[in-house]
Length: 58
Image (cartoon, rainbow, N blue to C red; front, side):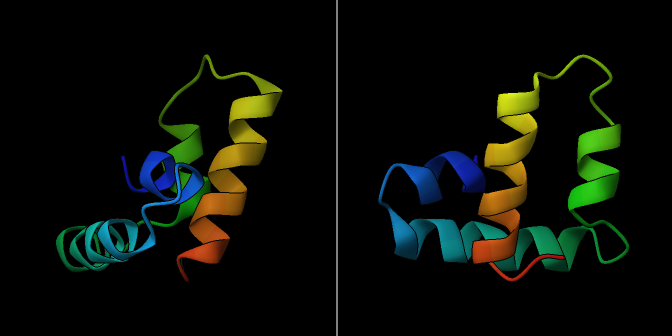
C-alpha cells in the first residue's frame, strides 16, 4: 500500500506507512518483499523497487 500511495502522489501517507513497515518488519526490505510474491510482473517489480527506494527502504 505504501508504494501505491507513493506513486499516487500521497507522499505523507506513504512515509507514515513506510515507518510502520520498518517498525513491524525490521528485517524486511524490498528484495524480501518482492520474493514473497512469486507471480509478479516486471513492471510491478520496477514500481515496487522505485517506491521502496523513494521511501528509504533498501
